[in-house]
Amino acid sequence: MPRLITAVIHHQALRQNLDVVRKSVLNSKVFAVVKANAYGHGIERVYASFKSADGFALLDIDEAKRLRALGWTGPILLLEGIFSPQDLFDCAEYQLSFTVHSEQQVEWLQQHIYPAQFDIFLKMNSGMNRLGFKAQHYRKVWQHLQRLSNVAKVTHMMHFSDADGERFGQVGIDYQRTEFEETIQDLPGERSVSNSAAILRYPHQLQSDYVRAGIMLYGSSPDYPKHHIQDWGLAPSMSLRSEIIAIQQLNANESVGYGSSFIVEQPMSIGIVACGYADGYQRMSPTGTPILVDGIRTRTIGRVSMDMLAVDLTPIPQAKIGSEVVLWGQSTTGTILSIDDVAAASGTVGYELMCGVTARVTFINQD
Ligand SMILES: *Cc1c(COP(=O)(O)O)cnc(C)c1O
Image 1 (tube, rainbow, N blue to C red):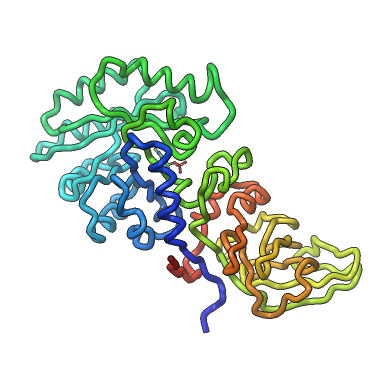
Image 2 (image 1 turned 180 degrees about the vertical axis):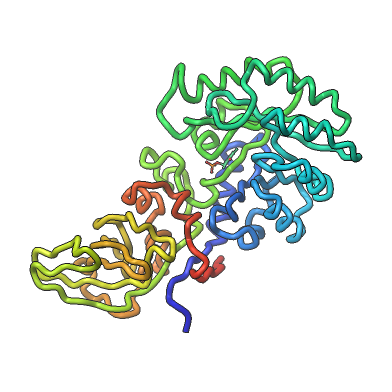
């Protein structure tokens, strides 16, 4: 029998979340962001539920090829563009649109003498300061691209650093938006600006012909704890589930796990769960991280080890070997433990947890 830990992918939730994107931005085309193997869900697994998107966005050409192998014939956008001049052959063969964010990439494009028609997303650095051209160079590059015979179409693109935060005014979203809009105001071409946080929080303030929806599709709130997934109508698309494999009765002053970091003050029943950091559960998750046993919320105790962790069974006296444990997501009885709650307790974000589930965990599809 395989180990008991599974990651259940909920297709109904994936479809519901895509629907939330659609309804938030009725006039935009929706690119489903499936980078990092669909945020850890598996591109092949999510594909059926995201097929109604207008396009897919990701980073790796190998992932783009996997989408083509699944039969996807619509747009695919490479969010970081090409990494070598050879990539242009793949872009031509697989009809991949790509971001252009550096002079180096423009040069490669210019030197590519083979017949091709590329669909380009020109990236402006409006303040994030990772990729893209600063406003004063952006227009020159745009004009340069217009003169290249292998450039068919240029879309204006930028990325917000603070769409999920509380920085407005001269910093954050307003500053970046102004920078972008002033720079491109008289240039023709469509625009792509919004990520999940911008889609949910500024659906009417931003003109984004192509939105790039990532984390919200997977049932994590981009601006947690200000908003929880329920506030946005999102549902968890991944449930990491395991079982209780042992129960211990601790007396006062006894401890559990490595380092004896948790010592009980009064007698307590604890459950040992078949899940550890080798499954992708964070070792840094402290005592008190929320967890469900038989659909009832309780807390982890002590240190997370490689293959196991411990839970407080005080609220679940009926728990037994084989009781269902939900590390994040939903229980079979329908109780939800949002990945955001677990991530916040662990000092991280839902993105990192869902991307971190390891290869030894069995994935299961569920409608
Ligand atoms: C990852 C990514 C997105 C999606 O962001 P979410 O916060 O997951 O919605 C959008 N645009 C770019 C350029 C990205 O790299």
